[in-house]
Image (cartoon, rainbow, N blue to C red):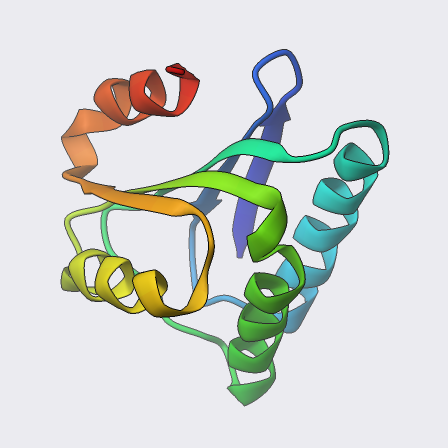
Amino acid sequence: MIEHRIIEGKGIVVVEPISALSSGDFRCLSESVDAYLVEHPTVRGLLIHSKEFPGWESFAGLTAHIRFIHDHHQKVERVALVTDSSMGSMAKTLAKHFVSAEVRHYPYADLDDAMEWLESE
């Protein structure tokens, strides 16, 4: 399950994975982000905040995740991975090869620092 919200005035999407990720989670997230992108050329920042990476509910969840990245990565300027999970460092390294956004990894407790970076010019 993913909880998410868009901070409209800042152009930041905050994503908080709560439990194993499903294809429905990414469908809802895509609908919200796509609606935002109708009115704005890009998403300033994507903040992913989770103590640990919860994994995927199924293979369909994994493929929906990959599809979300594929469909949106060129419209996201920055990504802050705010997690203590080892997946954060690995995702940052992999992202360099597959996404156009600038990606940074922060420890879970450094949410404010991550948000400050996303808001900065």
